[in-house]
Amino acid sequence: MDPEAFDDFIRRRDKTGDDARPMAVAKRHDNGSRTARENLEDLVQGAAFDEYGQFAVAAQRSRRSPEDLQEQTAGDGVITATGPVNRDLFGASTALTALIINDYTVLAGTQGYFHHRKIDRMLGVAAQRRLPIIMYTEGGGGRPGDTDVLISGGGLNVPTFHRWCALAGQVPRIAVNHGYCFAGNAALFGAADLRIATASSNIGMAGPAMIEGGGLGSYHPRDIGPSTVHKQNGVIDILASNEEEATQYARQALSYWQGAVSDYDCSDQSALRDALPSNRRMAYNPVKLMETLFDAESLLLFRPDFGRSVITGLARIEGLPFAVLCSDCRHLGGAIDSEAASKAADLYRFADRWQLPVVSLVDTPGFMVGPDSEREGAPKMMSEMFTAGATLGQPIVALFLRRGYGLGAMAMTGGSFEVPVMAASWPSGEFGPMGLEGAVRLGYKQELAALPEGEQRDARFESLLSEMYERGRATEAASFLEIDNVIDPVESRAVITRALRQ
Image (cartoon, rainbow, N blue to C red; front, side, top):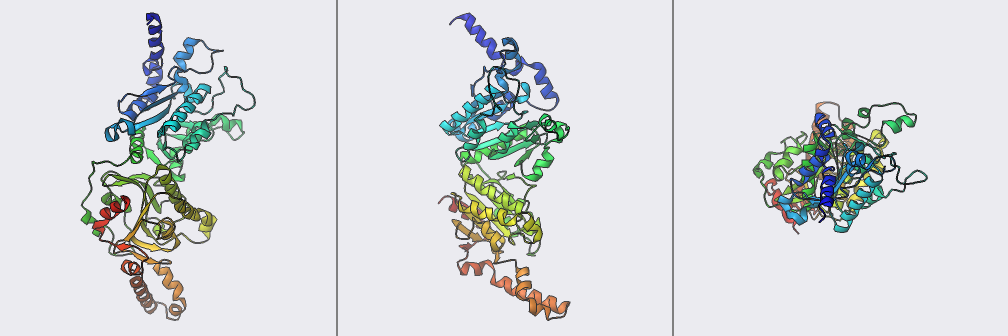
């Protein structure tokens, strides 16, 4: 080999690394951020990876020197590679992942001509080899400064966004963001199957320049789409404190798609017998219940501040991965409002894309009703749960913890109690076309109205409520084959795993 050519190769390669840009790296570290290459190294946990397009520079050769481009525009602002994620759990072959990591130290991670070409190439590799994708989306959107490519019109003939979205349901797509993420970068983030962002994220479909150019005022980037807003509106699925934690979440989330694990632990299941309060009207914390029921440290929650009357996420039992849907009686008594219905429908669609079974833990009085609910689009939003459940190609296991009332309970089981491969209830389960209290008030309205207000009416109400409760108990529902079985809570893990392994 020509020594001069080899030395030139080494010099060029070195210019693509962090060591070639000490000031940019120091600035990154000073604000508490990591470099793109540090995130890449953390993702693969030090394992070898194959980089694509490492020697690319910005398409600005007509106005900048080769040396300047190599030093200031390394990789054209994005690292694309294939490498193993969770190799220690699943081996190199199953762990192989397509990795796209925007580099904010290079032209603020903006999307230029070769930047898009690199992403498109990696999306093509992922499609061809059926690889999951993790994409770090930090960046300022489209870049107007590339001069080497002649375009006409708006320069919108860019396939990246279509190719990214076309992979939905083909391979898992996880987006991770830290810092500013505007315009095209935000479009890629928002279209991912799973969206992880740090508390320092600002995510907007337009950045300050575009907003001001549209005559909508002048804003600091920190005023646009902060994480405090997006964790409430459902844009962010998982909120992390920093890039290290966000990367950890990305590895954990991907592991559920990658398969079962053999190393797991769980709590003493006898605690489940006392997990619900003796007073059926009292609330409880379903997260603590799930942490007891599922494998230790396996519960990964999605969007906890959005659609709060249902809980969604990922978990494991005996190492088996699944998507989880759970009622939360702490909000609206567990009634499913429009936000919660949208969140639950998204969970069904997510499970279908990632080919994960669903475990649904049900304790709901049904859908939220009333004029306010209708103003929120209830007929459409709530019905989406039925459509998403009916088109779900993965098995559902339903476990009724307490209340299973009305259309809402049916929607929590994929649209019908006959949809789950197993629909079991704890002895505390109760069933009916609507909540018991409402059923008594509606069904016995005239009888109750005929009694004087006070103790006599209240006593009759409680008597009727008790009678209706007895008729709707889990064992009675099971005797009419409305559900498949009633089980001791201690048996829950075994019942779920047997159903999932069918």
